[in-house]
Image (cartoon, rainbow, N blue to C red; front, side, top):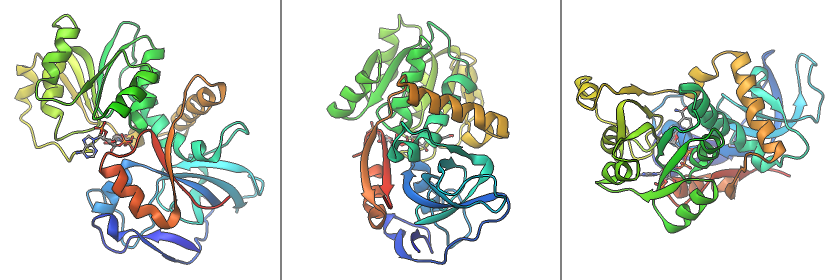
Length: 321
Ligand code: NDP
């Protein structure tokens, strides 16, 4: 079968379109013909070797496709499923964990299904897990027009929060407003000051920072005393080590660095978040934007676009019809 394989870590050029043997599912897996694979920022961390898989590996943490074979005979051949929580999705065929997949309702397209779980469940645990967002909360969110950003904005607004979104271009600003952001800002050295001015000088209840290195300092400045900084990503690079005393000097603030894995650790929690996201998309209360699609052979270009901040919403690899 055709797949993208990584034999050494590095830049987008290490994503190699090649022939590899088909995977053989174990009893905990289901064999799937992949129609669309979701592309996530985390794929770039594995590609670069910031996170580790044993080499060689096929990247891609999520996708959508049709079941070819279930060794346990529980899922019918042809069932359309979406999954996350395993590598190997940038391929024509994948063996995916049965406890990390959901049936895709007819009304949801394969493009959306392929990218709804990882980013959707992340937005869900950020807004409803790390802290249960309440009516009247104020939130600052970086990368507000990205895959996670647009979804987290909608979920936070639905919960009644004020959302200050940070983006880098006019196009992204428009998308952030369309997702419901209360106000949209550009990155700057005095971002925290600008946000505080809008917020009665108080600072926001929570900062959700997926950008990391370049924004973390402003995130600490923007949060109110005893507020929460949730550092959930490193799109601009990992944050330098900090002295815990810094939490004191910013007003006894809290800092967390969560992962989707920890917030979907049990099958029940995975199902609860996956169903919440799937249902919201099906009902139309969560608008899911797939900003671009690429052929499997063009995975390199997709990673280049993602890392040069050219993409909006989610992006996918279309592998077969
Ligand atoms: P996005 O679609 O949001 O793409 C990343 C965005 O980061 C860019 O579009 C860009 O938006 C922004 N950005 C800011 N600075 C830089 C920079 N120097 N280089 C590149 N991009 C930059 O990606 P995802 O939705 O997939 O992920 C968003 C973040 O969430 C990532 O950091 C990812 O690792 C994290 N994440 C964390 C999870 C967790 O459980 N902890 C799970 C899923 C994602 P702009 O141009 O507007 O700044």
